[in-house]
Image (cartoon, rainbow, N blue to C red; front, side, top):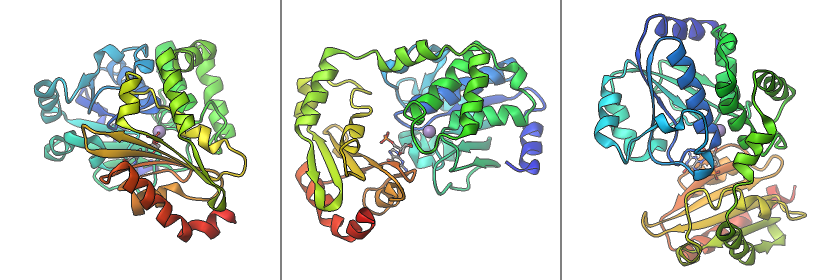
Amino acid sequence: MDQEQINQLKDLLSAPKKIVIVPHKNPDGDAMGSTLALYQYLKKDGHDATVVSPNDYPQFLKWLPFEEKVVKFDQQNAIAVQLIKNAEIIFTLDFNHLSRTGDMEQALKDATADFVMIDHHQQPDNYATVTYSDVHVCATCQMVYHTFEMLDATGSIDVDMATCLYTGIMTDTGSFRFRSTSSRTHRVIANLIDKGADNAFIHQQIYDANSPKRMQLLGSALNNLRVLPEFKAAYITLSQEELDAHNYEKGDTEGFVNYALSLQDTRLAMIFIENKQEGIIKISLRSEGDFSVNEMAREHFHGGGHINAAGGRSDRSMADTVDYFISILPQYKLALNA
Ligand code: 5GP
Ligand code: MN
């Protein structure tokens, strides 16, 4: 954010406002951590703030401080629509295109509020009055911390806010191991621990909440793992039938794609997950090094994201989606073997 944008944001927040804070659809740890931390700050600063999420989030996030205050657009539609209509400021966090909010998009487009975007994905859209976009930062939670720095507000960070921010940085960096993790990230994390974030407790809440059925679903996923050595690629499929057989719940497949990427000599990993209700195959893409899955997701799978982690979807059947994926690989062969 440049000085002009910081001043603009300070101006927007200089008197108590009605504020809505929005994460992307199917919010992850970074989306929920960042929106909930900002929510707490804005409340402390005297604003009337609400987090309005497009839909529900996984069980493993349902311990975050103040998550019970989140309004869900799909389940509490009338309340959510009213909040968006009345809002004077709308913060959009961890996404940069309103279509990432699914069915909530139109309500946001109709809103009269000033928008503030805080996000670290590639190619931001320009719907916001204040845009804080930085693709080099590992997590939106780290950017919210920097926003507090720019507002001279780090003194307001308490243990609950620190817990939310720590969670998003931890989940978006794969517990501080992805390339996006910088020395600055570790400095922020150190400060959050000083503010009271309990690293072992947070890790336990997120990663040690496995159910036997989820582990068995992982077994099915690993059984379906296929390797394409010629392209240094590997992929996993999960059909609706397989999900149903393991009583699939939102969040159960989180991280599965990383097993494909962990194979030796694999630079590209994909997981294809059938969603019969939406009539789509949801796709997660991961890569190592310079190979951009953001571009592959944009070009072929109606999606996007980061260089090494992106998502998208296909409207074809599972078999056709996999065939299509295999058919485009030759054009990436050189890049994948570079
Ligand atoms: P995941 O595979 O974990 O769902 O998402 C990986 C990254 O890609 C995340 O940063 C997420 O925000 C982004 N992403 C996931 N699905 C989509 C999508 O459908 N469209 C776009 N533009 N980004 C996505
Ligand atoms: Mn993120």
